[in-house]
Length: 265
Image (cartoon, rainbow, N blue to C red; front, side, top):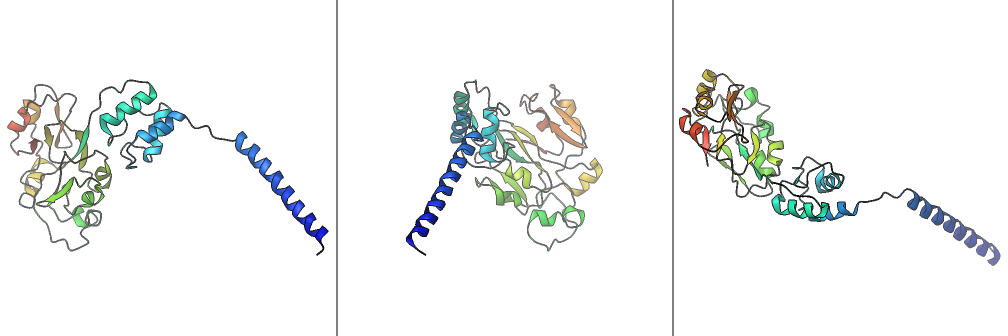
């Protein structure tokens, strides 16, 4: 190949490259996605755990929703009031009241309290155990299985397995909700940090069945309902529930509960 042919080839390639770069530049400007500067600032203010506890796909999803006005500035359960205040300043709004929430295991079926129907020999994992007959070996079909699937996903080391049930340290809990989503029994819920009274049972069986399965199970007797002067306690599906918006933390229900499953912190 002579020199002229080489120069011609180089010129053609360079020309094509120039034309393509011009088109790409025009295309990028024409179809560029505008990013709200506040979204970037909100994302920077978030803790970056990407736990999904806010209900959005990671911190970037929450930041986008907050910037678009589709999520509250206090939407991050892990960041708490400090992060809520920072984001409120970025968005130019009031942060409002922030209710810190922590996870709570609605079961008090310890090894001594809960009966066993058989010896479970399968994988020591709640998601495996729940597939066994009766949703596990415990006589109560709604109790904590005690194998620690919730503990395994906790980033704050806030969960321990004590005497056959999961116990959560509210001082360590970040309120991300990972354990809530992981528990195959659905017995972990997020409650206000200052909720001094909580029902430690999830059984939906009738009282006589629950009483046979667990010494500390709620029998749905309704004494707590009659005791509460603020209509904060109800019995639904044979188990007591507390409305924390109405509860005054007077402890009357806990004192009267014959099974002592309304715990007091």
